[in-house]
Length: 253
Image (cartoon, rainbow, N blue to C red; front, top):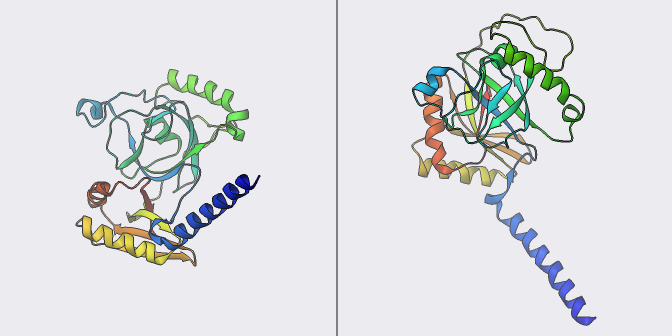
């Protein structure tokens, strides 16, 4: 009995020590989302991308399917165009396709058309839909029916509503100024954010890093802003050497 009490006391002291270590070691305290989401540029599929080896697999441009590197195959995602709030549900058909890490996914031309995505600025919000969500529970049948219709129809043919309700009219997309920043991470402490800035300066040639205070306990490290997609992609590729888990691209921050 005494031995069990000793083990219990030791375990409580061990947990307290771990919590104290995490509290003092501010450089390790990130703020992360439990559900996977990413905001950035999508790669709209074209056959010439396969021919030029910028992508390793083909995808049917009539389908409601995407390629993604981190999300499990056969998972559902919600893709939204932030410029007009149009969204659609798509399915991850593969997660082992090779394409540039600058893009958060490869989407079909049909998906791009459904959400009126600007081809020269294919900026999207992508969110993983959990298995116990309302969509998966009640709308999976609707998705399958729409997917079959999409695969049979020409790309420039019918317009599909991802929830099977009213058909939506295509609206003209207004031109927006190209201005984006790269979000590295959010931190609880400013010291942690400053340590990250120092690491970026010491390990890369990037000097345009800044800290944005979002609240008393949330500090965001950003690179930019960039007004040119080539400069944005170049900085994105350079920052990859630091192996950040989920880099995002944010518009007009």
